[in-house]
Image (cartoon, rainbow, N blue to C red; front, side):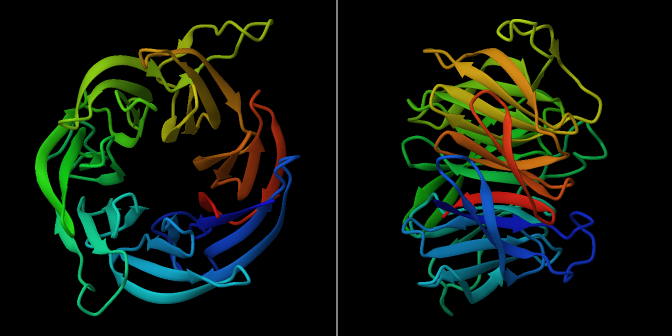
Length: 351
């Protein structure tokens, strides 16, 4: 059995009134069958939309996606419960992602204000205030790119740079990891105008980066230089692929811009890249070639709306279907093998 932590939104979605019972849930996944069970609301918090754990798994950090953004640090109790230890400013408005990739630090992408916030992982009075980094810029999609929108932060291969996806400026921003924090170090990659970079993943060898374009409904493949943390364009593929042919192997023509489709999360799983796409409500799998390029794309319906995030757990992919108010477990063939009702799930974190 694997325990999963689930972050949630208010039932009506991001930006709506909070305090209506949303919080962090614990759910059990049967490793053999993929069945979900034992859903339990452990702690009530306003809009804890993303959750990360420290290396030992005994501490969780959750961002509260509200205007005066906060990071809540929680201890995992011996019985699997959660106890709130501290609540600190996130360094900006409406934080949507948190990572503990950099040892000793918590990095927060504040979507609303566009800032990166960096805090000490261990809360203390001396380390209560975050270091905050922002910059200017915009993009051509005027209703979504009127300014900067930091959406995701990840430690780049080599461990010397933190990379932040800025949906508002079509850039991957680069920060050098220094003792006790990070320092801005320019732009790691510039995506085509209107891409709206949301999430980033890296191939196992660290030589290829994959970027989910929320606004152009594409996956951008970048040749990645681990030494300089710099990416250059190598390939672009659609995030949604039309239904397969009758034999189930050869995909038909790609769907490049499905109306209302918004890629939300991607992850490398061995020799495959997985991409969740809201609106189209599919999980797309691409085979990763020896050179990092993607091929053999196929999209599988998830049976529910708005897949916001997922986690790969052994042979299973556990997907948070936000607007369906449900978790779904998908097998390697794309079949949904189990579901569990849960209010507005937004993040899946294996314990």
